[in-house]
Each structure stands twice: as structure tokens, then as C-alpha cells.
Amino acid sequence: MSLPMVWGLLATMSFNAVDTYFVAQLGSAQLAAMSFTFPVVMVVTSLAIGLGAGTSSVIARLLGEERVADARQVAADSLLLALALSVVMMVLGLLTIEPLFTLLGAEPALLPLIRQYMEIWYFNTPFVIVPMALSALMRAAGHNQVAGNLMLVAALFNLLLDPLLIFGWGVVPRLEIAGAAWATLITRGLIGVVSLYWVSCRLQLTSWPHRQWSNLLASWRSVLHIGLPAMATNMIIPLASGITVALVAGHGVDAVAGYGVAVRIEPVVLIAFYALSGVIGPFLGQNMAAHLRPRQQQALRAIVRFSLVFGLLLALLLALAGRFLAGLFSDSSEVIAIAAVYLWIVPISYGAYGLVMSVNAAFNGLGLPLPAMTISILRVLVLYLPLALLGQWLFGLKGLFLGTAIANLLVGLLGYAWLKKTMHG
Image (cartoon, one colour):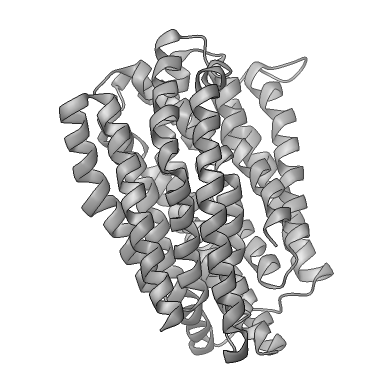
């Protein structure tokens, strides 16, 4: 189930990496400006992932009970909810660009560049959240290959549009950093339309939303029972990223640019963990019957082995190739050095971080969202923030990155123990 999602998610994650690569050619100021946008982009993405988790969990369990008509109804209601939430996020974002990025530590000179990007990118919000819900429907019904293929096509199209719109060619004007936002908006818009057609017409996974308000609310509650805690869980990730950007900003523009390069590379190398967490919830949801519980426990053992072994391989790879990878995005020795330090220290904890992703998704799939939210809160507020501040005070920027790694390792152990106890209880 995970393998088709690897290629699709790799393609999706490459959006940021590709945008960063081409924007970096414009200069360090543009690269730093885009780095400041990362936490905000992650907030929208995390909200979409959380809503998708709620949708996937409910639909997978309904399909497991062979309640196909109910599943289609809830699917339609969840898409309407996704559209409503995305419009609210878009409007709020457009109204708060300057105060928000000032709060994140952006220098006044960078605000015009940030505004050029985000004024366009925010219109992309519905095409992030609604297609994520559509992808969750496909995964819940076992159509992972379709979801992966659509994401792959989107990434290839974005790769073609980025240089065309950023640098201009022929009658196409040079839009610079705004061109990256336009490329994302056009690509995601087209893929959103195709995904909706595929889910509703080809796979017939939806019907029309409820017309009675009470029924619609009941349907939304079933999705948000998992979705709201999952959103909160995923929102904590960009919160940590925003805190880190603010802390890194105290070390200068090159430090922010270097961090921005590293966190664009990071999601790409973690792609297998994202894919695994994307399917473990539906898998556990479809195997809730008592006689299928051994399959759930077998899946947990496989996840632990994979996370630890693959995490160690990633740490070794990035320790050896981190400077080279950073050099693909920037010619600045300062930017490359900071990115390389991050890619040497933080990947030590990638195995534990990947395990946390799957643990949280597993709790959601089991219909138990509160443990996942608690684990994420512990990771960021109880462990990461104090450790990052302490590490920065003792060792500077390296200590800040070390605090991230230690927090990941500790919460990985905690999350695994909690899930194991729950599944054997």
C-alpha cells in the first residue's frame, strides 16, 4: 500500500524543493524570503493532512463494515467541509501577511518579496486542502496507485512551469519569486479538478452532500472527531518550524537561507515515512475485527523495524552528501555550511521521527486521536522548545539543531511504547 504513495508523495514534496532550487538562482534574499514562508505553507498543508486523516479513518471503517452508501455520503460531506475551511484559511492569510511574517522574524527588506509570493500562494489554499481530502478518499478505498499517479503528474507539470514563469521566456514575462507561486497555483488547480472528476465519476466514491443541516453536521462531527485532533497534531509541526525560523533568524539572513535549504531537502528524504504514515491509518481501520487484530500487531512490528533501519541509512547518507545537496540550491558558502550542519545533526533522529509519524497515524486509524495529539504536544512544547533553547544557549545554532534531534528520539520511544500498550490492551 505504501509503495505507490512513495512516488506520488516524492513528487508532491518536490514542489518545495523545485521552487527553492529555481528561486535560489535569484539570490539569497529571495531564498530567505521563501524560507520564511515555509511554516505558513506547512500550516495549510498540515490542516489538509489532518482533515484527510479524519476523512480516511471514517471512510475506511465504513467500507470495512460494507456500508458503501454511508461512506459515499460522508465523503461528499467531507469535501464540502474541506472547501469551507480552505476559503477561511485563504481569507485569513491574505489579511495577515505583514504582521504574521514580522512576528516570524522577517526583516522589513524581505517583506515585499514575501508579499509577492504569498499574495498569490494563498489563492492556492483550496487546491491544497480539497485535493488532500480527495486523495484520502482514494487511499481509504485502496486506490493508492491513482492517488500516487496524480501527484506525480502534478510535480512534473510544476517542474516545467517553474523556470518558465520565474525567469520568463518569449511572451511569458519574468515573474521571479511570484512565478513560483503562480506555477504552484496553476498546477494544483488543474490536478484538483482532475482528482475531483476521478473520485466522483470514475471511482464513484462520493454522492451529493446532505441538504439537511442536522445531517450535515452529524457527518462533519464524525470526520472532525478524528480530523480536529489530527489537524492540531499536524499544526504542531509548523509551529515548531515557525519557532525554529524565529530562533534561526537571530543568526542572520544566511542562517535562515541555509535552514530553508535543509528543510526543503528534509521532506524529500523522509518520503517513505510519509507514505507509510499515509496508509497505516486506513490499514488498521480496515482490520478492526477481533480475528484481524494479529495483522495490526504484525504491521506495528514491521513499521518499527523499517523506521529504525531506514532512518539509520538516511542519517549516513546525509552525513556524507549533505554539503553536496545543499550546494545544488545555493552557491553561498555560508548557506551551504549551515544547511550541511543541519543535515548532519538532525537526521540522527529520523528513524524515531518516522516512527512518530506512523504512531500518530495509527492512533487516528484506530479512532483514538487524542493520544496522537498528546504525543505531538509533548514533542514540541515539553521536549523540543526547552531543548532547542538550551542547545542554542550552550552551543549556538548547532545546539538548536541538536535539541531537535534529541526531542525526536525521546518522543519516538514514548510513542512506540504507548501504541504497543494500546494495541495489546
